[in-house]
Figure 1: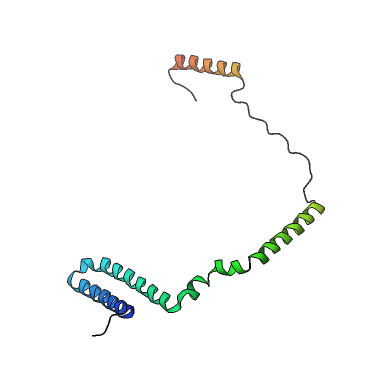
Figure 2: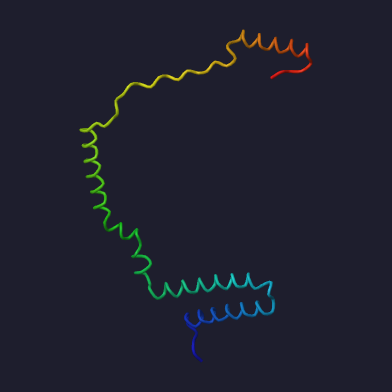
Length: 137
């Protein structure tokens, strides 16, 4: 008898997922979408496992942006320091601040014209309400 290996188990899992989708679509049509979703997730996982086993550590761990930047970190830090120094020197020598008149201070609007005006207005409205029975706005 032949021993089972990972490749045979993966192929069996894919075949089982496809058979489950076909059977559920024919026998239980209402269960077909969830079965199809689960089968797709399982096959995606199996495909990712096959891909990782084929390409190994070099493709997945050493081809990342983090690994690439780790090798060139000193050059990037040196360039950032140089550009920072040049920028600081340029902006300290060529002061580009805009000089002009100071803006006028905004004034707050007066609401109601003061306490006496508000009191007179309220009293006149109360008198008008008592005289006519309606409040004019």
